[in-house]
Structures are given as structure tokens and as C-alpha cells.
Image 1 (cartoon, rainbow, N blue to C red):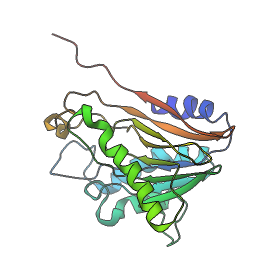
Image 2: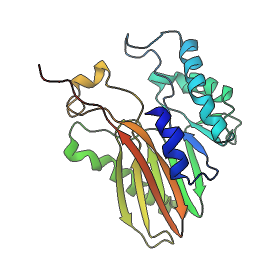
Image 3: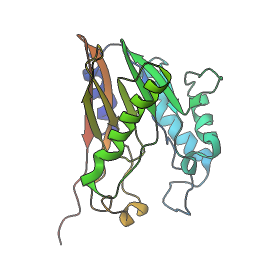
Length: 231
């Protein structure tokens, strides 16, 4: 799936044009909540593995690489381990000179996109839209409060499930949307105790954001795997 995503889907979705890559957090799993499922509990091993996986991706985008900080339980206090990885990957620095960051405001053509890792979760798929829609609305409220330009799109991750929410606007773009990305992790022991998560299949994949012909849109690729066979 990973090789197909970067080797086939991304070149097709970008029409083989130059593109930037944004990793939206949790590049390593860390050693969290007394878990034992990681391939190694040595953080240096995890960083080395992540580096070797992501280095070809950074090379394909010719260094146009940004790294968002994930959850402290996974990537260390103040994302110390993610910063070390981002530095090795030579991620583009923020204004403070850090290679990883908590958020990124990025233009895609004239459209303004806001990215950060966290988003609220839910124990019921019936309410999967709630936190996503609230995040989009609150982005507009905060922008109006201070007289700033609102984002045309917000991108979040964290919950490992792809989701989109869209509203019409009077902006040039004509709409605003919130997108939650899928992930690249199977179900861990923690998912089996969470309502909704314990019944859902894991999702793998990513998104490509494009602006073309006066339209901002998303190309997405999402896979899952088959459940266990009945015995």
C-alpha cells in the first residue's frame, strides 16, 4: 500500500507536477501506556526506521517537506523525538528555526490551508462528523474574532480514519472544508476497548490537496484489510 501510494497514486494525483509533502504527526509510536507491541522500545531504533522509510519520500518531493508534531505520548515531551527525526530529514524550518512544528499555514494556489495533528474523537460512527464540523466552524469564528483570513481548508489526523466535512462560503474558493487523514497503522490492543474503534477496520492511506482551474479539491486513497475469516 505504501509503495503504491507513493509510486503510483501520488504521481497520478499530482499529474507528475512538483509537490510538497506534509507529515501530519506521529511518525513514530514511542513507548506509550506500558505497551509492548513496538518493533523496538529503543527510540533511536524507531527514529532510524522512520528515517529510512521517509527519506525516499523527501527525495521524491525534492526537499519540499514539512513535519507536524504529533502526540507527546508517542513522540516525546514537546515532540523531542519527532524534532530529531524532522531534523535528520531536513524538514523545512518554521520561524523559530525548528524542523517540526505544531501547526502549518500553507497556501495551495490562492487557497489557505491549515494543518495540525489533533482532532476530537468519538465512540460512535454516528457522531463522526461532530468534532470535525466544530473544528471548521471554530476556525471561522476565531478568524472573524481577530479580523484574519479564515482557512479554506483544515487538515487533521490523530483518529486514523478518513473523513470530510464541507460548507459553502462566500469566498473566492466558494467552500471551506475539514479533512481528517487516514493513517498507516493497524489496530493496536488499545483499539479493542474503544466503542466504534473495536468494530471498525483499520484505514491506510493519505490525501493530495490540489488547486486547479479555480477549484480547491482533494484526491484521496484509502485502503483497509479483510477481517478474520469465519471458522
